[in-house]
Image (cartoon, rainbow, N blue to C red):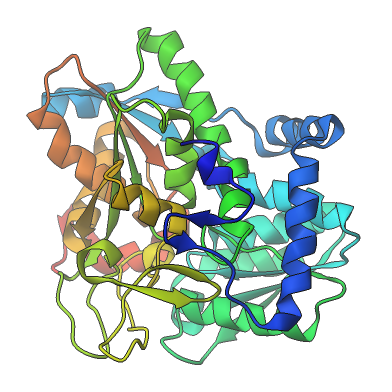
Length: 406
């Protein structure tokens, strides 16, 4: 299973592939060749591991949530705190890897899309470190609701461009980034921020994010002398989920759970969904260079989506995640906005950890699941990022100790 999800043809069952304008094919072929060469290169891996340790601050902690475990009264809960990475989320993992590859290919410029801003921030950071110029595309809605990250990206020297077309969210930022790459193919590397897009991006970002699960395996064995029973991660495109799951894919005794954005409920019309739960109402399609599940209308047009979290507000899902769902290797569920806010509040008050709203989808599922399990069971939940970036969102809904209805 693990080898299959890093295969060189970029297809996972019926999912994945590379569906692009002819002009972009040579760019993707060069990127594919450089990536597969690099991961066999001891010098490349040594430099990447050095950066993970000394620039990003890995390994990130695996923290036993003793208070939350006691409160819920069921399985033991461990939190993989990716928010303690430099730049505040797991996104730095693949940004460092792709930056090294871009340098190897002689690129001078990085472009990226971003929703929650964490990928944009990580891209801007590696661009500053390695001397690339940097342009980040961000849907206008996300640009307005993730102001702290916009400020940080600009301080790092990146040009942040708000995208005003379409729904003004993540998918629209991706479209603008692809147009930029078409216009500027020679010196530009598109540092795509999740396990979506055309081959080799899903494979490449899975490889770089797999450091999460590798660390978890060592850490949980050291702390408990056994492997976890459940792994839980939120899923937008799927980078933090694939990062957590990859090391454990071949052990079918471990249950893998992804949590999508349930938004205001699993309701929709022909134009807009009130959620971003692709596995609930999505249909198979080819969008933005790959085949997977997308929220579409009857004519195949992509619907606008909604989530309280900018990073999960995406109409598609990574092809490897879709494949794992198709063979029943993962369970998919969703959390509503109101459940996410309660999880945000509970984790903060019980453990002193303010998690990103994306991560709080996984926390919400953990809060539901843990009390149903025996106390000897172990849950590892991926806290993909920290929540300071969400101040302008959460402050609208939370006053002192009371949740405002949403």
